[in-house]
Image (cartoon, rainbow, N blue to C red; front, side):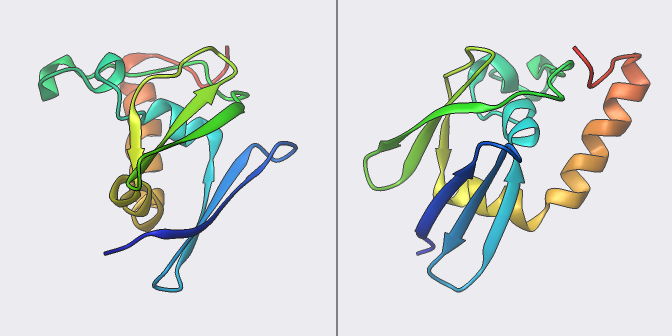
Length: 117
């Protein structure tokens, strides 16, 4: 089972670095974590209900709380604080960061939205 060995937030760069017990380490921007939040508010209850979150270019993290032995809850400075980032979800975000980011940028363009607030 993949589990983090270290979770570190760089407030200046606004990135979360997660190192796992298999030796892999991922640096995840706060903006990516926010716009791909696993919360029902963002993901909806079906794929059709998923929302495109825009205007979060400068979002930061103000808190990271452990949830049992399987996840963290991330509190963002835009006051979004729902959704549990499981170890598997964080690993998936790290492994597929480039594709997920490009899909997000493409979605913004298709919907006429911006990363800027």
